[in-house]
Length: 312
Ligand SMILES: [Zn+2]
Ligand SMILES: [Zn+2]
Image (tube, rainbow, N blue to C red):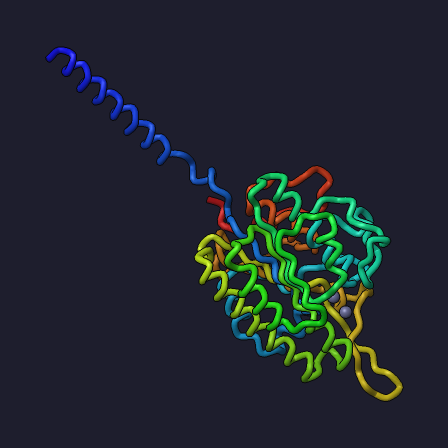
């Protein structure tokens, strides 16, 4: 009888300890979880804010209005695709990352010597899943070091085909850091001019692609824990040839070439917020790490765009 009493008393004590421990767990600060678990950076190649303003992109514009945005973010000089994307993904300028080339990737070209958000995410958490979906072969640069779990290259593919491949092959793997790159907008701008019907059609298609991507993320069950960043590698301007035909170019330090959009939507984003702080291409990398609660390494040039996010 006495032994049984002891036993009950011990059980009571044990349950008391368990209840206390559980209460302590509940009382842990919310900050113990990362600000966001899945970061989707969507890069609209040659996606100048002036072009987006003219284009039929209802979903992009709705998400920008409901999220945080600036139409006056700036890319690096030269405002060209691979150097810019390298800054977007490494958090440093071209002087530091030294990816000066912008044509076909080969193993003989200068490779990455600085970390990307992909391998920083993997170094912080070995279970982190990384992905890149692109239509340009030069993005093999980011894959070459072995940091990308899911690399989808549809050489010359449309934004819609990229989005469909993402939906089919990547979304269910629930990537933590993912770059989705729409290259056909750039192709249309180069060939037909930056305000051509062809480029406007490419923009409109990228909006449909955005819908496919968002629905795939939602279907994967991670939309509530996902933050989207929409941006561009560079803007563009027209030059008119002897034939009188316009074609789009970029690469210079002209305002039209270096001005890019920067939109945040989803988890932790301040609703309906206009970003007034300066935003530079390499801030995207810093923001992605900050959202994932991964320490930003010394030597990063980028700073997280903290004003765009809820602080609690
Ligand atoms: Zn580009
Ligand atoms: Zn281009």
